[in-house]
Image (cartoon, rainbow, N blue to C red; front, side):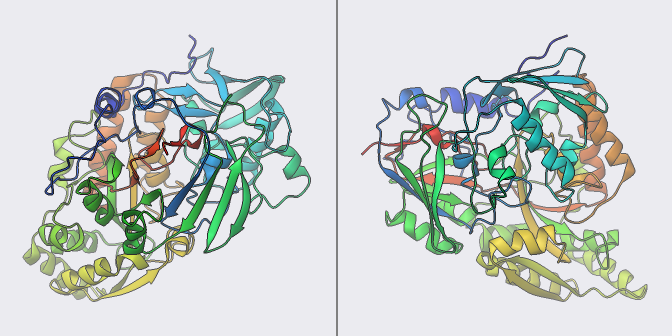
Length: 535
């Protein structure tokens, strides 16, 4: 049985989003008649209708206000990097309907139901330094993730038993066990992927890839003044004819949410990488801006540290959620437009069950007080820190006030976003914190977030039953079995109160009306080659 670029038995949670992107894109982002009371809703989550936007114009520099400073360009280093898809192209690309499509690679197939996979590469493609993109380059890059345990894609690469170059344009992967979803690993964003390649020549020469990336993307790094600006210019060796359309990109780190939105509203930048509700709510009501937004599954949530008190105790995790007034949170934190969520998958997803939603703790201040009192009576200390970004001071104060009503003393701690990602989340330096993980298809996000060894399992939650269900869902070729596995996972996670669900995600891309050719994931990752300026 051959699988070329389609995942075995894939049942996607994004069909409705795809339909919106495909048939609702024409005119959907025309903001010229937006009413003042326009509410946040799903809008062009995967970008615009490129074919309907006219003939692309060449030239110009796109100026982006990013929500953080970039940490590194090394794919084996964990960090969010807006510029990664400008410098590195992904080997494969996830479509809105959940299928994996060719991109830098031109095929991916299995002859034996997921134990062996063959990747076919496009002939003649080069890295920006002129090095050919061949089978050996794929093997060298994949081996880096195998060798570096700290790589966010290390757990993905561990599935591989062996690799070989069949010929210069064909790589064969033999896995330790069948994995129907294996192609997804090569279509993931920079935060955890096997799909972004670094020039083997640069690696051999000892180039500091974190600061001087050499990839296959539409742009190359020209200059980087940390905490000021980054400039990228067109890649002369780019493999897609006639692309990119832009001459260059300038990225400015603007970690303060208010400042970032003000620069967008004032026209100082062409695009912002929106991370919070405040940006997308105001952008929806602004007829002079274009918004690309899809909440996806999962969302924004509290992360409990399971490794030490107080959140190694289920009672305290429940108490936090029962003490929380989500209506007050909507008014205080989400401009009255909280998009509710109480489980891993959205209502309407084939992986969601009402039972999971029913299990999750609901607001009940008196019960929260009792749980805290029981914990104290058993010798526990209900004091803890809440760690968040410097853009979320109001949220820190809100959590502090809410928990105090139930007898929990909270000390807020604030970090800028770059530090927050590396020192807090990856470093485990927190007791209670918050994070955001929008997703469509559950693989491999569920594994990364909830498996005992998951690279995004920041709270170090461990449940052997969940691990087994995650592995079975990834390996099976039976859609019904996969669906059942994820439904069980969702229910167990809510029983254990692994995360404290707050709201859906608000990750967005907001642009001026003359920015065209937006092609994106709902995680905000962009495909920069198609972007152009209609000016």
